[in-house]
Each structure stands twice: as structure tokens, then as C-alpha cells.
Length: 325
Image (cartoon, rainbow, N blue to C red):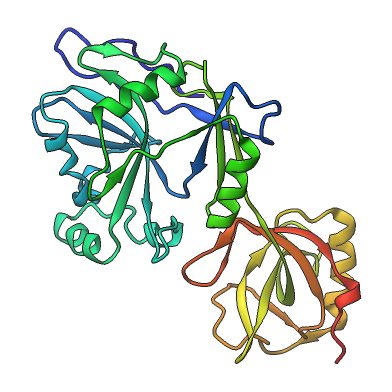
């Protein structure tokens, strides 16, 4: 748990360092009249500190300075000139449909060289989604209710070329969820309207509910589980049907029970083969290959830009869909 942030600027006039408030995973709250609902963006958390002199600092959730990484966001400093402010938001990269794509954002992360960052900003521009204000003109706002802070934020910042202040829905959690599902967004964050901002803490006053996709995949290989008897899989390598053949979709290791691992050990031993069944290269160390007979059901948060499942979790084997040789 991170330490609580200071509640005021120090004697030098420096702005406070405020750690971002975190949400707990869980279902949408019911009843929901006292809750606000926002879209959950698949990006990197960012605290923006702007002293009002035309400069700003972008800080990651891990307290790292990422200001040089996103030069297209620096123009926000001029918009905030004359106001000392600390904002909370999420840096995202948007695909052609306007949805956040973490795979695109990963191409920007960790780049501190100014020239390279500027080039990448042209190819994969970042966008800052601002959803809270924590400090304004000498006053810490974290003790204010969510609704009050959002009202203040609306008067401080409006949409710009690389940033926005999305609206929220009061109540109507089911409607918000339907909108997110139709739009292909990552999920919903529910925030209690009366809740203060608790820096660095994971609070039940903020709940995140992620949309997951469930799909059937074909097992084409596996990797050995560390510390387990020979043949026990630590993960299975899976693919999906493509016009060219079986396309590799990633490695799935989470969610398997000991019983399922034991069953898979026996099944995979019987259908072993010497070469990969996937159409393209699979860069996985220590891979063992099998005939693409077994079908499994997995869930995942989304697809990456490289065509891989993001955060895949094993659900069950589908013997009813087993492929004959």
C-alpha cells in the first residue's frame, strides 16, 4: 500500500505529490442511484502536475516521470497556464475506431529519448483521458465528494487535440454497461457520488467491472510447468482458425486446476508431434507441440494489435468439440 499523499503544498509553494486512488474489482453496484459510472480505459494511469508557469510533469502510477515519453501532451501546460493544478487520468492510444488499444500504447512506453518519442507520437499518438482534479490554486480537493470534484474539473479543463474530459452517468449502471459492451471498451468504473479521493488506496468506493470475451481455441502446444513432474503443462499454446490455417493466439496458463493439469498431461502425451501446427512462427522457449485436436474455452479481456489474447484465463476443456485426426 502506498503512503498517503500530503494534504497541502509545502512552504516553497511546490505542488503536492498525490498518489492515484485505486478501484477494487467487482460487479456493478445495485442499487445504483448513489453511484456514477465512467468508461474504463485500457491505458496507463497518469497524474498531471502543472504549477501554472507553462510547464507540467506526467507521473506514472509507479511514481516514474514519463513527461519526455509523451511530447504531444505538453501543450496541456499552456492551457493550464496561470492555474496550479494536479489532475488524475489515463494515457491511452486509440485505434481507428476510437477505442483504446493497449498494444499500441506499449509501443510508446519507456521511451525517454526526445527525438524518438517525437517520431512515435506521429505514428502512435497518445491521448490523455482526465477524470479527476485533486488540487487547484493552493487548495487540496481530495476531501471533496466525487460530484464536487467533477464539477470543479469541468470548469478547469475542456477537450483538446490530445486530451478529453469524458462525462459520467449518474445511476443507470446497466445502461452504462450496455454502452461499453456495444462500443468495445474495456469495462466500467463505478464511483460513489459522495466519496472523497483517498490517495494511494484501493477503495470500495470505486469499483471496476471488466468486460471479458469467451471463445473457443485450439491447443497446438504446451510448455513444462516449473517444479512439476515431466509432462505437466504450465501453459498451453493456443490458436484460432484462419484462412491460412491455425493462427497462434497466445499462451494460456492461468485458471487450470490440478485435476485439469493431470488430465491434460495424459491427453497431450498421446497427441504429441515433432513440429508446430501453427501457420506462423511461435517464439516460445521450450515449446512442445501436439496435434491440433483439443479445443478449450478461454476468456480474455481483448485482442492485442499483434493478434494475441490479452490476459487469457482458462475456463475448461471442450471434449464435445474435439477434432478428429
